[in-house]
Image (tube, rainbow, N blue to C red; front, side):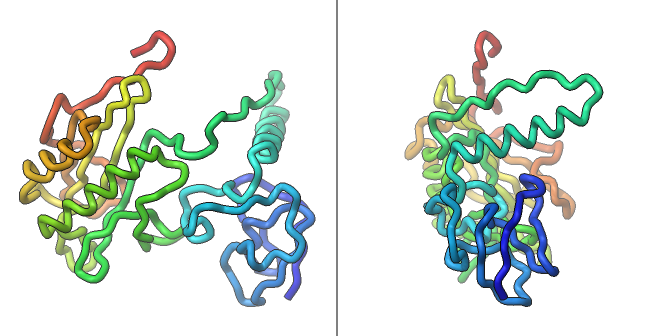
Length: 257
C-alpha cells in the first residue's frame, strides 16, 4: 500500500496510519510498504525523499533503538527540536523566551557515556545494542554517536572476554557472567572509566583482562565490577568492586571539576 506522511506529531513518537507504523518518514514523503508491516519505514521504501533526508552511515539504524535522527540533515534536526521546545514552553503559563539552538560542530561520535549489553552468538560473547522495543541485542561496537575511542575499547573488551572464555549472562538459563559494559569518558582529560556489570561476584581472570585492556588503551584509568544478584533491567546496582585505579574519573565543565 502507499502512504503519505503529512506531519511529524512528536519528535520521539512513531506516527501511525491505518495501524501501520510510519516512523522515519518525513513530511511530504510517500512510501510503499507491506500492509501488515509494524516496523518503521526504511529509506528503500521511500518514493519521493524529502530534501532533508540524508544517507545513513549506520548499518543498524533502522533496527536499533539508540538514536532517531541520523536520516535527517543537521539543520532540519535543529529546526524540529527548536520547534518542539517552543511548543512545550508555550504550554506553560510563564512562556519564557527560547533562544535559538546552537548547532553542534560534530554531529557524530559525541556521546561520552556508552552502555553495551552482552549476548552469546555462536559460542562467542558479543557486545551490542538493543533492537528497538525488544530485549534482543544486536551485536555492534561501531555506534556512530558514541565516542570513537570508546567504540575501540568496547571492541577490545569483546575480544578479551572471548579470549578468556567469559560468556554473557543468559536470563533464561541463568548461565554466564557478563550483562553489560559501561564506559564514561572525561573530555577534559581524555580518560575513560570502564565498568564490567556481572551477574554475581564471580569474574574469572578479571585482573588479566584489566591489564590487557589498559596495555592496549592507556587512557583507561579505572576499572570497576558492578555486581548484580537479581534479575533487573537496571544497568548499575549498588554493589561494586574496584578492579583498577581510583574507581572514578574527573571531568571539567567551565570552572567546575
